[in-house]
Amino acid sequence: MSPTGAARCLVFLAGLGFLVGLLDASAGDVDPLYRSCVEECEKSGRIGDLTFRHCYFSSDGFPSDGSWYTQEPLYIRWKQHNCKSDCRYHCMRHREDERKALSLEPVKYHGKWPFIRVSVFQEPVSAILSALNLIMQFNGWLSFFLLVNYKLPMSQSKRSYYEYSGLWHIYGLLAMNAWFWSAIFHSRDIDLTEKLDYSAAVALLGFSLVLCILRTFSVRDEASRVMVAAPLLAFVTTHILYLNFYDFDYGLNMKVCVGMGVTQILLWAVWAGATRHPSRFKLWAVGYVDAHALWHATTVPLTHLWWGFAKDDAEFRISSLLKKAK
Image: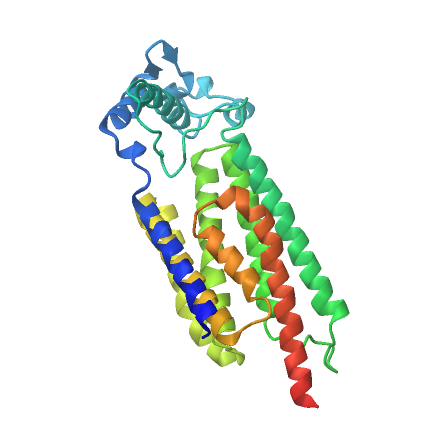
C-alpha cells in the first residue's frame, strides 16, 4: 500500500475508535432519576400535573382492568402515543430541564439525543432525513440497475459481466427497506415500529458485511459464496430473532452493529488502498464520515457516493475482464 493509502487507513482507525466509543453513549436511560420517573409514570399515569390516559390501557389497547368495552379505538391508538413512549418522552424532558438548570450537558436516552415532538411525529427531523435517505437509495439503486443492464457490455447469454450485480440489487432492496422503517419508527415510536426498524437495520448491516467480504476477497464462484455467507446470515437471523422474541437488548444490539460496521469499514478501506481502486476516494469518504456517526444527515449525500462507487466498480471490473479477453 502507498504511504498515502496507509495514512488514510490511520484516519479510518481514528474514526473507528470514536465509533466504538458510542457503545456507552446512552447515559440518560441508565440515570436512576430518569428510570424511577418512567417506572412511576407507567404505574400511576402521571408526571407532576400531567396525566396520560394511555397508561390505563395495556400495549394492545385493552384497559388494565380488563373491561373490553373501554378499549381504545384503533385510530386513536395510532394517532396518539402509548404509555411507555409518553412516559419516556416527558421524563426525558423533565430530566433535561433539571440538567440544564445545573449547567450539565444533554445526554442520550435509548440511543437518541433529546428531541421535541411536533404533533403526532416523535422525531420529525430524523423522520424527514430517513425519508430522504430512502429516496436517495432508490435513486442510487435505479441508476446502478440501468447502468449494468443497459449501458455496460453484456455477455452472449445477456447477463452482466459484473459478477456482483445481484448482490448489489439485494443490498439496494434491504437498504430501502431499512430506511422505510426508520422513517416510520421516527414518526411513531411504538414497540412494533421499533422492532421493525432495528431488525431492518441489522439485516442491512449483516448483508452489507457479506457483500463487503465477497467483493474485497474477490469471491466469485457460488460454492465459496455460500460458504462465506451462510454462517454470517445465520448469525444475523439468530440475532434478529433474539431481539424480537427473547430480549430486546439495546447494548448487545449496539455491540453487534458496531462490530459489523467496523469490520466492513476496515475491509473496504484497506482493500481500496491496496488495490488502488479508481473509486477508492468515494469509499474513503463514505467510511470516514460514517465513522464520525453523523448518520441521518450525512447519509443523504453519502448514498450518492456509495452507489457511485458501485457503478464505478462495475465499469472497472467489466473493463478489466474485457481487456484480459483480448
